[in-house]
Structures are given as C-alpha cells and as structure tokens.
Image 1 (cartoon, helix red, strand yellow):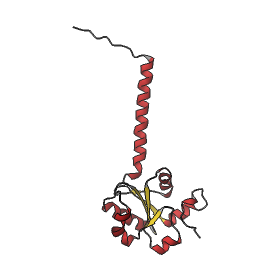
Image 2: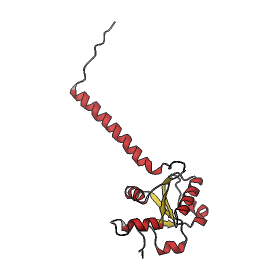
Image 3: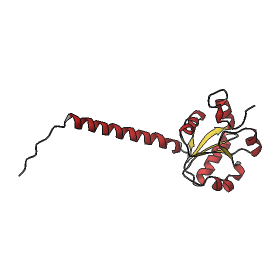
Image 4: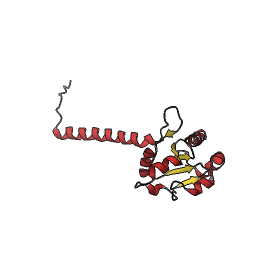
Length: 158
C-alpha cells in the first residue's frame, strides 16, 4: 500500500495560483459590468438609464442603435447623433426592418419620458432583449449643452 505525503507548494506554484484566481475574479467582474447594460430594471423588461449612464455605455459600445420615437418634424429640428427616426405610431411596423438583431443594444428616447418608456416596452414586447430607455430629448439637451460630449447631438440646438 502506498503512502501519500503532503507536498508543500513552492513559491512559484503559489504565485501561479494567486495569479489564476485574480484573473478569474477580474474576468467575472468584467463580464458582470459588460452585461449590466442589457439587464432589465427592476419590474421592467427593459433597462432605464439616466443620460450620464447612457453616455458611458455609448462611449464604449460599438454595435448599438439609437431610436428616436418622436414625430419627423421634431427629429428634423434636432436629434442625437446616430439616431434613427421611427415615430412611436409606426414602431411595430418599421422596427423589424431596421432592428434586425433582437439581441442588439437599442437605446430609445422620445419627446417625454412616458413616450420613451412606452416605446421601450413595445420593443421589449416585440422580442428585443437589449432595450434601454434613455429619457427624453429634453433630458439630453439639458445634459449635453456646453459639455465635451455635445458632439453627440446630431443637429444644432437653439
């Protein structure tokens, strides 16, 4: 019968173990932070983001859509950069042609908070899982004017 003796870990093995565990924890934290933008808010099938949080996500994400659900006249007067205009009344009809990937991050804003929430709800009901409501256009006007990120506005604000 063999007897097994416990062997002490060398300092090199200890360093390797600590490095592995640190990398594992860092990786898990990164995954959590990256998936946070598409998790629904409590009680909602979509995320509700403040303007400052939405700006952060938009700064590091590449493949996202911004949907402006206001009427075309309001969109023409000023909108966020990269925003595509799909009026709320035409959302069900036009969204599938524009939003082909149901898992893509989609940021929605409207004339009012209620309109953007209703649009985010409608998109979620249609099966889009990466929907985030980002407030009203007026919220963005207040937050962006005079900042270094004013360039996010697609048209001049008067």
